[in-house]
Length: 423
RNA sequence: GGAGAGGUGGCUGAGUGGCUGAAAGCGGCACCCUGCUAAGGUGUUAUACUGGUAACGGUAUCGAGGGUUCGAAUCCCUCUCUCUCCGCCA
Image (cartoon, rainbow, N blue to C red; front, side):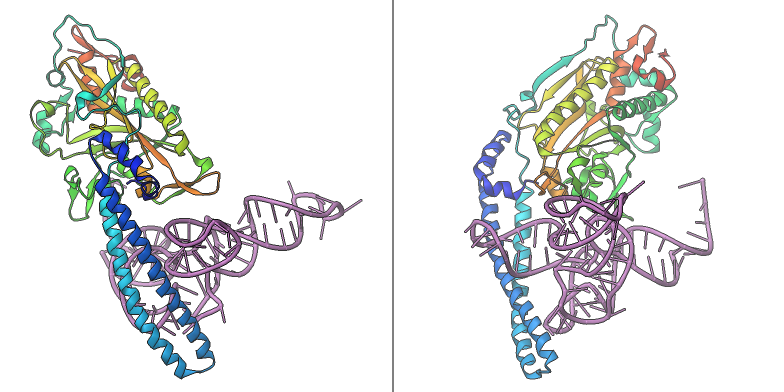
């Protein structure tokens, strides 16, 4: 959620920035500013009534001591009239606040100046490419090789639960676990504190991170307990910092979390969901940083380098995209997408998305820090995947097909306990 | 799941209807002192919104939300979390 203060201070700047997303927010922003004026004047009137009421109460206390019952009666009569008036102002106040809120949440975050122009994914700008892939052999798509080598049982999972819930078997399971450990260890060494969050969250938490209202359709819901299966560990991890006041010296906060992620992915179909491309349950390791505003773009670069290093250690061909205005997520100011190359499908698969949300999340979270001027200000929050497992697994299974075996990247050896998978 | 006890400021902890935004202690900050010296003294020390150039004001906030009352940290209701005992259990 955008800070209303910034809207008020410089509405045209916000409008200008939002144009990059292809939206004209003029009407909404003007409406918000108008409503905000109403809110303040209503509040001032209410405050005056309440002040009068408070004074009456104090008078009565004095009168009661003097046993002046007649005047008490008069004061009470005055108060009851004002009380009614205050109720009107209060309900008006709530009404206006709700209206402001419902307008404010319509506005997406303001794109950073580095965000490329453009409205579709074709306008995303490739800013980096690393690695190469050369093979004269025909590459078997991961879903075939995984079944052939009994690493993943898609059908079995589909029978137990449904499609999109694969069973990892034997070396497939070990590879998965090895990857998780590799990611977590690498993140830990870079100073991220490891966290295992709850895998279900309550309504309030889902609301805080913006899954509801609006996107509840993406989550699995447990009706009896009114809990949601997390679509990403970002939800519980971010909520750790709900309504927190941090000290400057506590920043930056760096944490990394492993969790399974659950997504209903209603409406997905065809080759998009083939094999490991898109699952209802998948594993992901996430990195999150909370920092002071002045440093957030340095932090973003640091996180970008961090994720790059992981992919380099795995030896996978990948590229980094700077998402254009139209493709940028609702809450983000600047996002780098990481895509690994899938030789079996001859396409790029997104494995990470690293974003700076500036104060968009911390505003809703009321996540503040005590700045050097001794004033509370909103922190900046950033997160990224490091990494989403299934597509990395898919890329490995395809990229490393060598003759009659799959080679395990060296960085993983100490985590998997084996160096190859024979056909 | 059953029974009970609780949730007060950065922390400990007073406070059962009115001068309590909240005693006291600890901690923090500022200044002072310098032969009680790993000490002493004085002052200050919440957040949000809002009026004012400022000085200084106003309103709200004692787990959350309602209610009673002229007036609620204090009484009532609902929810929530923590603790103790019992039950169950990996």
